[in-house]
Amino acid sequence: MKNPKWIPTGLVTYLIISLRVAWGTDYHVDSVNGRDGASGAVGDPLRHVASLAGQLKGGDVVFLASGTYDQPVRLTDRGTPDAPIVIRNAEGHDPVISGTTWELDGASHVIIEGLTFRGCPSPAFVFGEDVCDSVLRRCRLIDCPPPARTNLTERTGWLRAISAPGPSAHRNRIEDCEIQRPYGGYYAVNEGLNIHEATCVPSLPRTRLASGLKLGLPIG
Image (cartoon, rainbow, N blue to C red; front, side, top):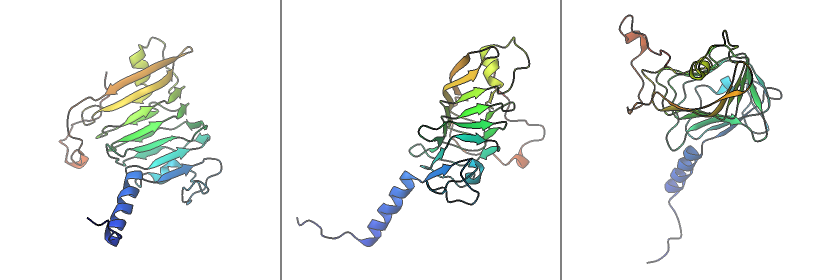
């Protein structure tokens, strides 16, 4: 059998597109040197993570440089099992989420990694309705929120910093996170949340829910 000396142009195009989808796009965000309307390339960073909300796809990675990020972020973007969406600290950087809340709402296969949440309201991070197969990993939560009382169990303490609604969310996890204790030290949190063997599909639109039905109650 002779070795082929050419590959059809259509096949080449298909392979390039397939690889691009698998790899995704790297975005860079810098709260100090970034700018609104930037491309997000390494030499042209965005200023706010929220600028990417609704635009991310499976395989995309968002790198945050050191600095303070004080805008709320609500992500509805959906990755895949083989190509999750990742939002993480850039190598050697320590980005701080300050005084605001980050929320996943209807998102799936999203990994939030290597961030510090400081002085955020209650809760600092929310696994919202319909969120599936997502992870909060290697994050530190400091003064999120300042404790109102001291007689908290460890589970109650970290639930006040991370909200994990249950009925419509599946297979979410907290991995290797640290949450500041009221009087020094940290809770080490590794826990699976909303462990249901169910297909990850969006719920009905909220306007179609029966009157008085409330989703998203905290677990506990």
